Image 1 (tube, rainbow, N blue to C red):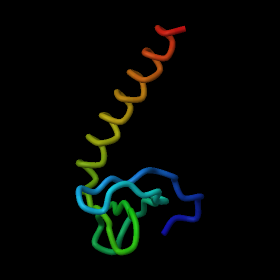
Image 2: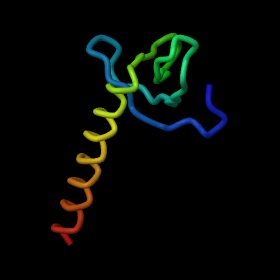
Image 3: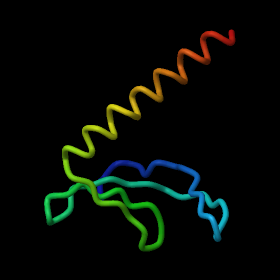
Length: 72
């Protein structure tokens, strides 16, 4: 796990409903980036997939900022 503070988030599951979780991301022994979600749940991504995910998160963040500014 990383040495930085975990990232607070909401986790939604069809049967379990909504819960608050702390996310973490780190490079695992197999060379994949792991996003730890909660109690034994995680996602493993290749570096290329992480690059694409990061690009999409940046777009979503910019969209949020634009929407926030347009509603002011």
